[in-house]
Structures are given as structure tokens and as C-alpha cells.
Length: 237
Image (cartoon, rainbow, N blue to C red; front, side):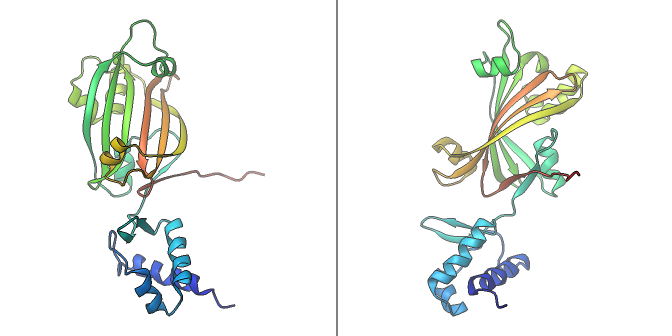
């Protein structure tokens, strides 16, 4: 059975991308030119383009055109992995930019989740995270001040998990994660260098030490066209 025309176009464009004939960030020819090249109607061509967009191979930017998408960074939703280790595991170079790192009074949510009492303070850290110099996420992390007491702010922002393990004598344990799809606000869009508003992924993660004590609450916003989470399930009889 012959494939529909839009599937043939999808496969051809995908091959061009996979063989680097069309490279990451490259702008595709106009719909009119592509439809003429493939000898199909613009409606058929548009079906193929939308299929490629849905599968993460292309990205459309309003007013600018259609571009080859960056390969998305992936995180398997299991256990706790630092962002830096995750990016390195995919052969990329992690980096970050600190927006702020302040000792503050926790809000009600932070106080409840981190099991804080009385006048205990937190270190609230705002960072932009990069993979190969591409902004991937903007995160706000809240950590009980007692876990980072005595360390310079530079140390806090460089390797938080390593520092907490040294300071508490406990290893990093499990995490609870909740992901929702939201629209970016102007501040986050500027940090991630994306149009405002854009569809992004919001992650709330509560991380625990191996004694089940919560040590970190993170609210992170990921650029939806650069990052994806995935689940892996084992089938059992």
C-alpha cells in the first residue's frame, strides 16, 4: 500500500534532518516553495509539517517561519539526578547563571513541605540552567538554611547536592515530582529566550535524604521545545 503523500514528505524531511542536510536551527523554505518542490498542495505539505512539529523535529515560530528543532534533553522520571549530571550523561556541557541566592523567611508552602519550625530560614536560589549554552530551564530552589550553613554562596550554587551530602552526612534519596503544562510569564520567557507567551513545562520536585527528610523544594520551568520527561515501565504478569 502506498503511503499518503504527507507521510512521504514527513519521511523525506526527517531523513534530511537526521543526515544533517538540514541542521539544528536552520529555517526551512516557505510552505509555498516546499509544496512546489514536493509537487503537492499546501494543505498536504502543511499536514507533513504539523506531523514533524508534533514529533519534535521542527518548531514553528509565529512571524518567523519553521525551523529544525534542537534535540531535546531528556530526563527519566525515576530517582534524583542533578541537572549537571543529566546534561553530561547526554554528552553536553552544563552551565548555569545565578539570578539570586538569598537567605529568606520561607513562605507557607516551603515551610510545610520542608518541615520547618519556628523561625527557621531557607536559602532560596534562582538559577538559569544551560546545556551547551542553550537555556533549558529557570528554577527556584528552596533549601533549609541549616543544610547549607557555613558555606559560601558560590559553593551553594555550584554543586548543591554534593554540598548537602557532606553537610548532613546523608545520601540523596527519593523525589516526588509533579509536572504541569503552563504558559510562560514575561520574566521566564526572557530568561529562557523564548517568545512570550510560550508553552512550557512546570516541574515541582520535593527531594529527600536517605533518612526520608525533605531537603529541597524546586519549582522549575523548562522550555517545552528543548526538554522532555519520560517514563519507563516494566510489564509484569
